[in-house]
Length: 311
Image (cartoon, rainbow, N blue to C red; front, top):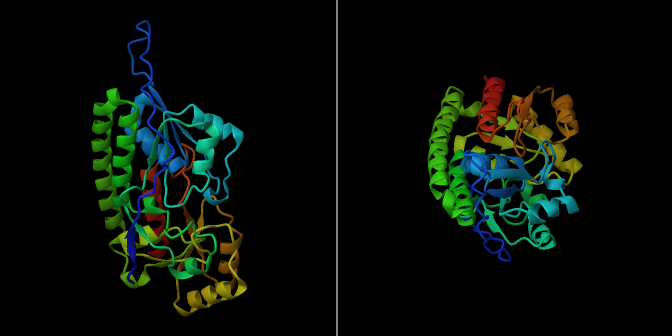
């Protein structure tokens, strides 16, 4: 299918660059020091900031692991964390509707980074999204699920960290280059894992419409009973239509999504007799001992889970 694309660059206009952190006293141990503090809106962005910042950056994720991004509302303690940050990283594309509000409440004066700045964003309106009143505006925000887009995320985060900490520029550039090489290898690995699956079999169902970028990049069709946000249940008519489509087209696998209630997918599985092929990770990482502890782990785990269910 052909999807329309549109370039969108969003910013937090009220935020200005922060002053460089003060140098550590000479009495400090001769080891890498945390020079700046960064706050990211959710765990995937926090992982990218850690990869690029290394020991120069202390990173906090506002949204806890496993929590639904679409239902998060920042607390006063979250605002205090932003107050102390030199860098505030958000995804953009309407995902964090609360970002301006928390920045104002925190009196944030640091460097704002919109990770999706410069990417080609997918236009909302695919499948059920056009009927969803909670679609985060005009664009699908889940751009991180295409590895190619993460290259732009990396560039934006690198530049933001450098703006807040010019002394770390060489470190951020070196770590970014190393991470881009890992992304190239990941993209090739995903394509190799999916290659043996016939195109006609690459049709699956997930909880909500989070995987459009993955679908475009890796030639997999995703159906979902809910649009871009999990804020609203599907109408009975939409759910019945999806169940009929699954049966008519003999779709072979359903998937749960980490952080989302399994209730809806379990209902669809009962009514269609199609098995649940596992859990996919769209919007949150797992703890360190889980299968999606980093962004690279997330993409690799998703792909292997999809391939195993369709084999």
